[in-house]
Length: 204
Image (cartoon, rainbow, N blue to C red; front, side, top):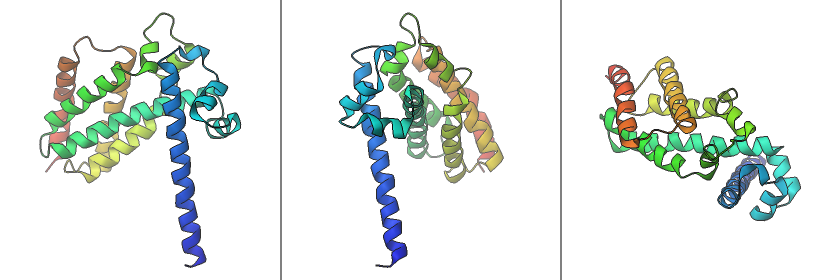
């Protein structure tokens, strides 16, 4: 094996290890959030629950805010995942794909303990900022990934159109986190009706 191949393999191992560590940490945070509210959870609590050192958690996330951002990023990324799956499961039927994608996301976010904490009493200010004034931190990565999907899938959107519609889809989803719909089935259907004509026009 050449030095280049060894370096490339080591790089892949490091990336895989980092990804596993992040997922383990965020899973541990979710379990803690099922037991008690976000303001009472410390980085030490998360480290113990994840079976890692406090220094390791700080090195990856830097602070409690960074940890919250990582958790929120994973939640918005789940929106992209479910919409991607729905698009590939429903070729040439963008209305059904978007309706299914949003419906699944509403179910996931509606059961998420961090989202639930936003609607129980006094919502923590740091979490409120993440979905309002500082929301671009979590919108941008998800929108970029979704835009790529809209370009390479059967939707076949142009880069410019994909960017516009992807940002709109993610921003609207985030607004539902702050203000959940009373009827998720109706909200999913209406959201699909809103975006579907735009995407159909871009599909040859």
